[in-house]
Length: 494
Ligand SMILES: [Zn+2]
Image: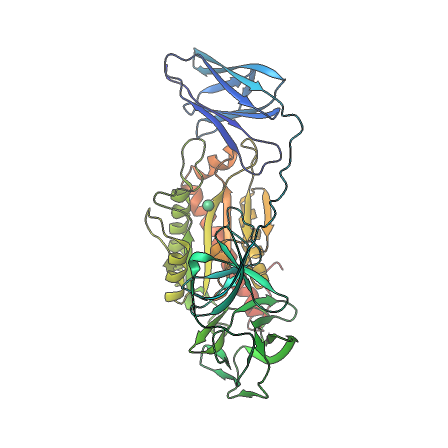
């Protein structure tokens, strides 16, 4: 009887990720396996054929429809021999595993390494897809992004650490940039005078233009109550003595220009509408242009182009579940279901990928920018935590103006009666970074959780998830319409 495929999974109580410590396939010979762990809390996770019954350490455990089963054990120091028993009708098969628990003597927390900055003093120019980081640290999402920069921007390098340059933006402001994203330049400057400033209405955007003698670095952010876009231009001295407005504007209520430090010029752009539909900061020759999108005239799905990103793909499958389900496949299946529903409702849909291929983050972003999408939803599935608990749904945003969209999507996901894994802001995910369109990341469920995996293993549930995402989008559009007095309050529960 080939009932067994056993996977031993140890998850640390405090660690966010599940550590797979060993994978053992029992075919004939081995009756015994060994694993050494350093935490007394241990998740033993195994797989058998669906429909069999299972017991771990003499206690019957639930076998999920996927065939996965598991139990949390508290280990004693030294050897822990654990019996796993499978029942198929009258057939019984038993395997024993030995988990050796060796407590570590006082976990040493490693101090953060001293930043060892080599001193450099020269100038560089940005290449395509360069971005500034606040600091020199990083995690799996990379260093915390301050924002993307257009090519041809001159930066003063004041130091180097690992593969980063430290650059000086102004007297008091430093940032970090990847060395591969810049090249040396003979151009240099200390501080420059700004030229004229004008605002115009180009039809579906309002366009602010600040003329400069060369391309200076900038950073932008958004704020709420009132909804405002703030752009800091570093190395600039205000010599713009009036702001010319040529047309009635569609989205910008007013622009104010402030010299916040002797070498930082701030553009404060107050919006008329509560919801920001995106903006871009870029250079046109040496003029800094801030283009602010108008709220779409038609706020039904019929009038909009929705971007959908299925995370991972190709040689990068993302998280893999206990029974071997690939996150990239689940993400794509859910995206295809969302696409079907959106198209039926008359929306235009732009997918980053429609097959099992891997695209880089800049490639995905370019597809969405080139197709001028109105809104983006990224679909992923999570990993980490206890494999034996239902973990649930969560949604993520970076820019505060995307919070309402992201919270609305989560509220509808929770109608699936799954746990709330939370609403996360300031999220440093690459596809949450663009400012050009509202965007949100949905981590539908957890690949690593056996109860969540059971839901994800059934394609009929991908449709149910997709329906909730679309309901969230419609609810959000309704909130925007309400805020403009276009509809009376009805569907929204806000
Ligand atoms: Zn993912």
